[in-house]
Structures are given as C-alpha cells and as structure tokens.
Image 1 (cartoon, helix red, strand yellow):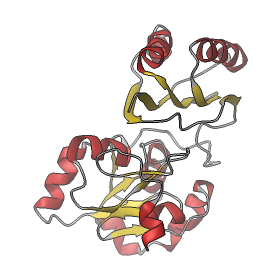
Image 2 (tube, one colour; image 1 turned 90 degrees about the vertical axis):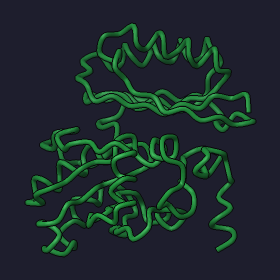
Image 3 (cartoon, rainbow, N blue to C red; image 1 turned 180 degrees about the vertical axis):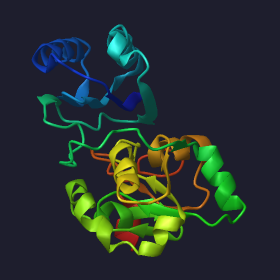
Length: 243
C-alpha cells in the first residue's frame, strides 16, 4: 500500500483559471502524479495519487497559495496507481448543479463523530444521500433516503419529490467527500427545509473517523479502485458483484 490517494476541494474565487491550470499541470507532472484536477471560477476539486512524498510536495505547493492554504484533504492508500493519466481541466463549476445563486457551504457542517452519536442514540434524523443512484446501491447509511439521481445536476429538479413533512425535520445530507453537499444542503434550505446539515467530509471522512458504524456496503469512488470499504481499502466493487 505505497500509493497515497488524496481527494480535496476548496470553494474560493479563482480569477486566473488558465494560469492556475498551467501551474498545477506542470507541478503535478513534475512529481509524477496522476488523477484529475478541476478548476472553475468557484474553486478547485482534485483527486490525485502517487508516491507519498510527491503528493505531499504537491500539497505544499498548493497551500503556498493563500487561496488554498486551508484546503482539507482526505487520504487513503492503495497498492497500485488507480489513475491512468493526469488531467487538469477548466470547468464552469467544480461540481455541476447549474444553480449559480446557491451559496456553497451555507449550511452547517456536522462532524462524523456527532452523526455517529446521533445514530447511536436513535435520534430522529433524516439521512439524505445526494449521490447518483448507482452509488447509493453499492453502499449507503442505514435507513437513508435517495432521489434516484442519474447525475447531481438533477438534484434541484428532484427535491420537490421529497415529502413536505421533511421540511420540519432535521436532515443530514451526505455524499462521497462532501463537495456535493456544499451545494445540496444550501439548496434545501432555500426551498424551505428548516434544519439541514451537511456531513463534514462525506462518507470518506466518516469512514476515517468512525469506521463502518451504521453504514452498509462500500463507497463508490471515481477511479480504478471502484469502491472503498470502511477501512478505506479498495474492493473493486465486491458488494455489487455479490448482490
């Protein structure tokens, strides 16, 4: 397990995406990293893998830019490189929702340990999975709700299908690493849902802090590992094959 995999994002104003793309691509290539970096006017989103020292060197370069100094990183390990190449792209959004008026991060975050405590206590809370349906079917929290999404951009169109009674109940949204909830949770608040939280760092952070408590199956990841178990080990999507 000598390949370090990182996932990170940061919502912050980026006025020089082309310049940033050139700098990121050159530095990642110099270090022999592979994966995907997305850059948009609203921020950056990256998935990279390589030798640990090289990945940490890239993060050091990234954090030297004040805009990304506070970026939060989720780490996992694999025996092989899970990406075939390095892609650095400029996009309209780092996660596509097509709702420019949504303010990312406007909903309160809920720490994984706090969510586990709520679930241990049997607290009445609605868990809303904001991921695509095929991801949900591979693994999700117990007693979760999902919207049958084919793509996250469908989320605003699907939320009217939620029972109106949920507007008076506490809701915790979750996704793989937290980025989709940065937009999904504020959107729900804008639609009249009164108490909405977003799981801080998503499923991957929950696995890291709490293991697999209250979670069934695996977490889909968008690389050749296919999915991770609660110990953050690659499974190749074994749960879907066994179903």
